[in-house]
Length: 306
Image (cartoon, rainbow, N blue to C red):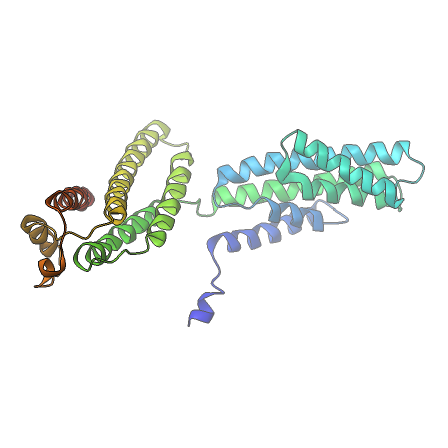
């Protein structure tokens, strides 16, 4: 079963396949002699969100047109633009200009268009290159429209699920550090928090539908503020847990802390205090961090059910 799950087809893959099919069909209807460029254009800009697709589409259009213009200069000025030295220099020019104009994402497609135009020997290279540019443009536009129309990316539920997963990680980590006096590995927790922050940035940048725009913008801002508040509570819990893990002593928690931990389903060993020989200050520090962490944990739980 795990082997089969590795080959799961996601929404982005489906939208890419649909984009390629539609781009090829439209290019053929328009009479393209090489519709493969429409397919390449469709593949190159399919992203998780349509905003990213729009940015990448504009980037690719500018880069592809730049590659076409440089190819036009080469085939016009140079006697034999297919000579490998000229080709190498031309690709270097395309890459350098794309980097200078901050069109890094478009470098592969711009270089392909440049090389294809320079190597064409079946007629007017400039006209041929313009047709390849328009073919690519068809693919870019089709991919953008598909990303807008077919289930636009909405990661709200993914964010909620990730937050739930992170919150569930804390109690076992508390059990390990506070009641078993181990130093747990916090790397998985840190990675989850990094992933959550990335998804939240995407959520905040996602535009809303044009209909009822003002209402939807207000609702999105309110939702983003709620999710950010939850993230800050999780970050607070991470900080308190990190402080506990940075302690070089293993004091026994106080009675109140143990009661709160047990109220959350954790089990304190009966002989917990027998093998804890630390100063009262260390115990106070541990109780302080445990209290802060559980306060944030309880507040987050209540926050989820508002």
